[in-house]
Image (cartoon, rainbow, N blue to C red):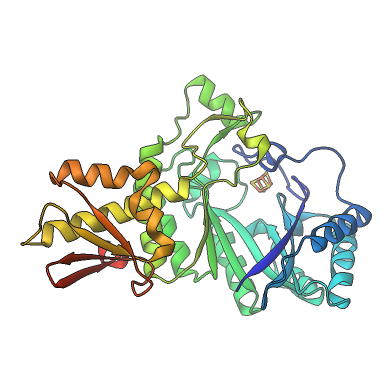
Length: 352
Ligand code: SF4
């Protein structure tokens, strides 16, 4: 479903305390006054003026950057009332809120449903209690399981966010989290590799030498594995890596960590590189100028940033040239290799 999202940032509102990695004002690049009914209405009207005319596109008001259901009930109600007035006018279809697992219970979900909240996103971060504790999350993996059950029973759309690479995390624990998330059957996931953001307790740990974030290559490797597992389970991955904002891109905001403006492309390209390797190594009649075919939407994933995949494949297999044919007939997530008159194919799910 194609959504036109109207983001309303409620930085840290409702958060019972600060998780060690979090500084929403820096991440989202918002500052100043708290959201009010008036400011919400102004923002929604502004966005509605820019809404593209696309058939079937649904409009959703999304509360991000805090723990929506941890806020005082009166504040939740006043914001939801304003958002709901746009639904009654037929200008908006539904509402999305982001929150913490321990701020969900059956009563709050019924309350949200009454205001046409259609989607709840939960910050899961990890399904390992030791990792959650070290990040000062203040909840356990059991809280997440309970919250997910409540949301699923109420048939609301469910999004789960994870943060690989928190203090105490290891590749094995990250994949444990991925597998537990898959078992919870979310409608979509977001993956945010841990960054050290300015003015957070994690920055202090990093500067003291008590925390080392993943390198870019380590993050690509583990996110590649996570993506493959989510894809194999047919769970859409709506984001990999933080959304670039002018504030995030400002020098000194990200202190350390696997930051890259096109992080997802790096991960998807790593998957295509792996598929190309498998096809080449299986091929007994490979010529020096092989032709690959790929879905046009994934052409740049296959080639890699600045054609890096092509260069690496040429060097590794001593190839003279690599031809790439974008073809609608190739399904997304697959790659074909033309040899003579026959084509061999591989699907990314086969990499698992
Ligand atoms: S991670 Fe979520 S719960 Fe923790 S401080 Fe940030 S917004 Fe609040």
